[in-house]
Amino acid sequence: MAVISPNTRVQPHSAQINSDDHLVVGGCDTVELASRFGTPLYLLDELTIRKAAEAVKQGLAQYPESRILYAGKAFLCLAMCHLIDDLGLGLDVVSAGELYTARAANFPPELIYMHGNNKSRQEIEAGLQTGAVNIVVDNASELALVGQIANELGKKARILFRVTPGVVPDTHHYIATGHTDSKFGLPLAELQAAVALALEQKESIQLVGLHTHIGSQSHEIEPYLEMVEILADCFQEVKLNFGLDLPELNIGGGLGIAYLETDRPMAIYDWAQKVSSQVSKSFRSRQLPPPFLVVEPGRSIVGTAGVTLYRAGHSKLLPGGLRYLAVDGGMADNPRPITYQAKYTACIANRMSSSSAEQPLTLAGKYCESGDIIIKDTYLAADTGDLIAIFDTGAYNYSMASNYNRTGRPACVLLSEGRADAIIERETNADLLRQDRVPDRLLRRAQR
Ligand code: LLP
Image (cartoon, rainbow, N blue to C red; front, side, top):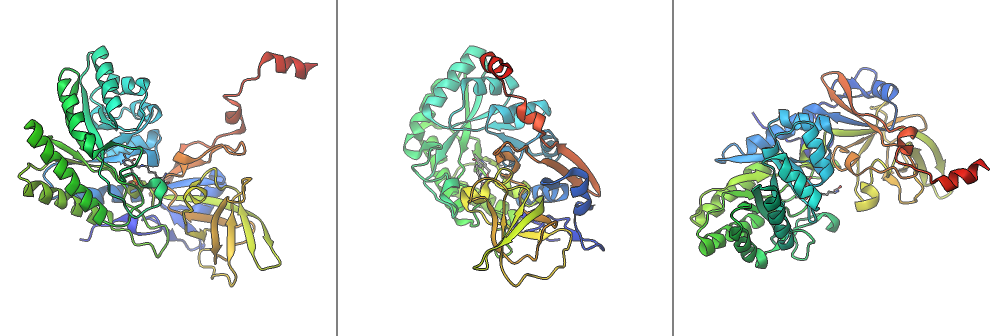
């Protein structure tokens, strides 16, 4: 049976239309969800996440030994940690906050990998105190700090070096990371010296392998195959210089998803299958043993599972024919259009079979910036009061959301077989004041 790769489809795996002509996700009527939880609302289809994880597993099935880490920066909260653990995946964390979330969910420490190009002393300490957490060391000065902290704590840090292979995927330049002048990772020319330094610190450092991540929202396989060849060269050089077979190769994540019906990302099953067979080939041809292979998909696991519901508000038609329809959210809950000119697909969740409009419509956000546009020129026949669903908002929406214009972040609801559970509550106005403090002198003035 063909393996389903959700990342090639715009809609979540469970999406349907019911007899009321409403969009249904995870067996739940989105119109009912909007009235129960309010809008804007993030929805997450559990089945899509499960199918995506299964597709990566199947794609890696022929490879001797591997591990899938979910990249938590795409979307993380306690329930997501539990779900990822339930799927048997590990977790890539990139901050003290993500690590704290994982620990609070009792996520197995040995399956946590800590990333970041400027981990603080506190973050490294927290990692080492958590147990067998793996640390992906980004640069030479971080190696010194990790060694020093491990010494102080009487721990041995299990590390991988992140290298910058000089490979550029087909993506927006803000989210490419594999190029030689990237802020991330060790330049290839510095790797062997860093390995020597790590090997000198046998008491505090256990170097287990190399990591790289070339970028995000990439549709093509070629940059990955090229990167695997370069990494295999690195392993070979380490073997020649130090007589050491590093056991672990982590090739990061970055596979894209379809945001538009015309997008053609490679299926996540094929990606996993092709990169892992390239690893086998590249290592075999250099007479190296196949490394323990680690992959770190984020967007391709959770992106397609997400749908954002908005209520349409005011509209206006300009003399030149331009029509705006504003919704009750925008750049604070989805900063991707304004940041990367990202494109999305929408539908009218309460009138799924409505025909297309004759004239284009611009779906605008409600925030105080002209660039806060969700979709420019869609042919949705939407109007005030409609429930607008935006697909593919599972990754880098909630995790990049802000309180811009003093707006609380929306709730997030996990949907499965007709059940809807809020896994993140909506932020209230009181939440917005929680960290505010007023100096006495200003209070006194106000009382006068
Ligand atoms: N591993 C590392 C070390 C990473 O830096 C990232 C993403 C991933 C894995 C997961 O990549 P994914 O499979 O999700 O593409 N905010 C941007 C994306 C930033 C990605 C950062 N790193 C966006 O909204 O497109």
